[in-house]
Length: 351
Image (cartoon, rainbow, N blue to C red; front, side, top):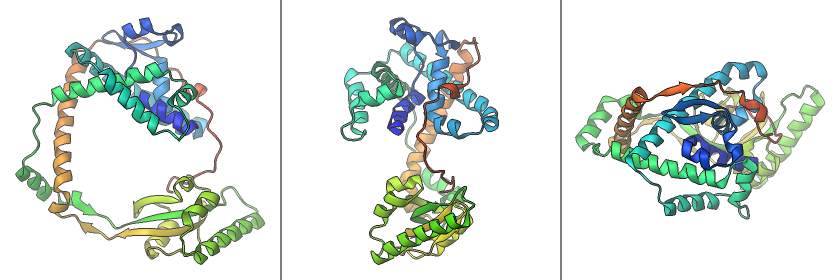
């Protein structure tokens, strides 16, 4: 449940702080959060910062030791504050241009969010668990619509690149189109983290061997089912699927086995510092240089979007230079109000 609630909270990461008019119409509780700074009169509150901190970094904040938290917290806060300032500038500019969010478009986006939730769960349930009012979410969606309208106006003069320009870019940047060798794989992890007793470790190995025997007998067809039932990695929710990875992205023992293993086979047990892994390679891609024909459509789109992004960045710089940004207070530490995260197995970052 918390994961989905956090997904709703992540809407706040693309939202903008309440305007003065919004605050006047909001419940008293919503105006009680200290104002950290104003952007041309638009307040950014401690609650605005806390919500986005928890939406973006909640899990990391809860898992960090205190000494590490102290080192990165200020950097995270400054990043969030910068994004909130940019968002406020864009919203103010969109309002000045007279852009409006059509209610039907807002409702359609809300319906899209509701459909993405687990069956039988209403969007109101997740919003309540996350402590977010539905009207606030609708307001944030409306803000995003207005910002897109603003961006469309700012970048209206940007044209899609001519094919000659796309081909010239391809020819001048050959390294960007080199594709490293990679494999796609799934795994079942039987964790031995924090175990020091040899008998306990041996029991874990025996458990992994028993699972491998079941997989071998079924020729791997039951891999997702057994991963969901036995794996100690969160990838169990996807049947153990780890997706595609290149060299250098996994711990050495795991990587060596995956790259040497044949597609579709169930490999021997692989021992790493995290425990015993049973690996099934599902696909393999050899190193190569992508041809122009393979990349030209995506490259044209990327160059088009890059030019628009540069135009928006220049526009934002102009907005910042003309804005009156007045700090009033320092943001409080967000971890005190962090929602409790359900306990789960420790997961290797590489996996």
